[in-house]
Length: 451
Image (cartoon, rainbow, N blue to C red; front, side, top):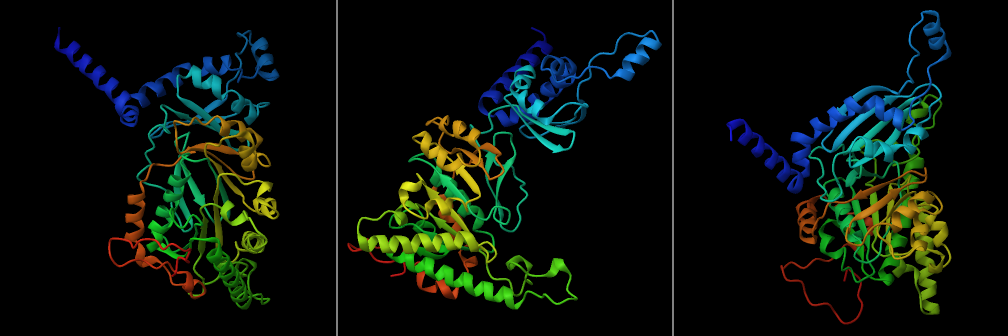
């Protein structure tokens, strides 16, 4: 065998090994070139086969008849740009007159087969321009976040979307969110990613973990307040409402509504205040909201109503005061009692991991994105962490958070423990941490996290 043949066999073997073990490396070395050639060579015929062409215009037909030329062929959308990405290709198309962005969205599955890609999604960039994002491999099978992300204050990356883009949690755009998921669905890993990404930022973290703090207490060095039982939670929520009212008083004192002040400088929330006056934003994480909503006696019902009322007030009024809610639950329906549906109406961001029944998926998306309900119940149990993310606009996407162990999350929180702010209203609920490496044995009776 000649040297060229041996070299070719080695290259093919390396390509096959990379495609099996390291799909990202395979795509960046071999796959992107082959895919770009397929798209450029097959573009016209694929668009015609997928019925994404339009007949020639009347004036072109008239010119062809007048000049005795062949009849013009149907026109396909003009390819404005083809840009390789780390996970696939991004095509920007200029639609022909009479075409709609929905036509391209309806043909994405046919385009996926025609161009031999793993997945194709479309979005409308502006009027008449559509972007197709093609992925060359299953990016959710082994999630690898890009080294460079577009992070900003109160905007953190938490997962990877199926089109290869990064899914961000932007609190200023979506102040409150609901995350659903059955046991072993990856909900806790999503929560750890969220806390780990928020830890390096100037933000106060508050936790309500009524499962005796088993999920959030290991991360307590980065938390300004933590409640590990419903009795402590009701007082913590009252303290948050008190803080919200004091922040509103600060905003009113600094609104600057004089006639000579431009409209853009009038303060309506904490982000309009000067940096030296702006209160610290607070993110409140509820590990299992059902533990606050369930009750078994008249005394517990009074406490439950007080808790839910405080949470509803925070969801309705907390955004301007810089208080944002992250609610995690297995189910979130009206069976949890009065006030739950009112609370759900305030939760703009929706994320659903694998659920055990269709009604649980309806609790997340039934009122905003019915198409996402079917996608949620189709999440297989052997892919923990895969979730459907949607919002009140009706759009949704499939995401998966990178796996992060509890030890990794604890190390990140400990590394940024010096950034934990001391908030006077929440000082009584600051978690008491043991000085030694070995934590003391839990007491028999229920005690607050600050004891």
